[in-house]
Length: 114
Image (tube, rainbow, N blue to C red):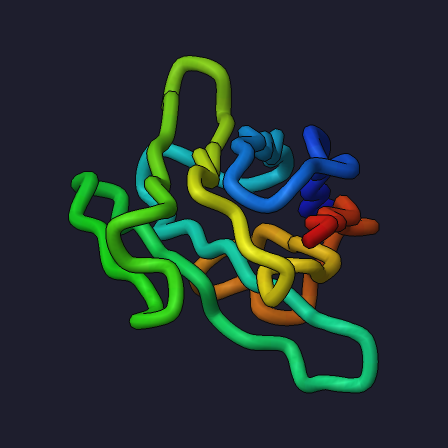
């Protein structure tokens, strides 16, 4: 059973930083690409960042230069370092695994006050 558990969200002022974490279980983490998505209230879920099993990263244009995705295979964990946060980054953030699109965690709420 694949499980994804996100943490690290919170309330932060615009310009601040947060680091999100996701622990994955039930899959071969070191061989799996990982994603961070977000869903703002009333909007569709959108892809924020992804990292391949080899460490290649890609970002949505809206977060390039501000967010950094990374992974620690020894801890079965993927991270999202978010800097220079904006009000429009407010959303519930979810991690997801390549090939396991039907499995979602509970997400972690990020609220950026302007």
